[in-house]
Image 1 (cartoon, rainbow, N blue to C red):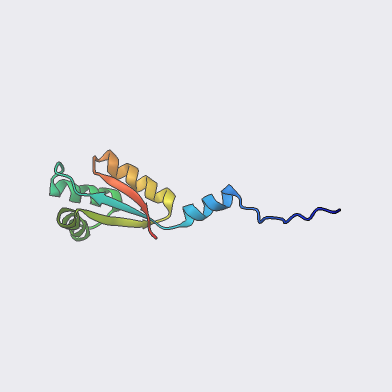
Image 2: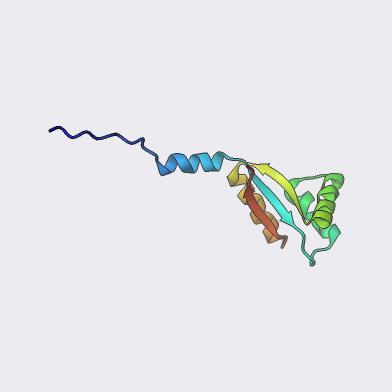
Length: 98
């Protein structure tokens, strides 16, 4: 008797990883009781090149709402931004932008 086998679709980890990396990612700064507002504005300007007005807007959002999404895009660059912000001692997280 010939055996009947079904060929299951092949799912590769590489394809899954590529799809996950391609998703947009959010760089989020959280409020903390340590850093002064003018310091946070200065860091946003240095890391992202924001002008004074945009950096201040994000700083106020962090202060009033507890967090602010500073940037959205590919994961590799998002990880770089998170690392840079953390080096400046800002509480920063990386999340998928679903």
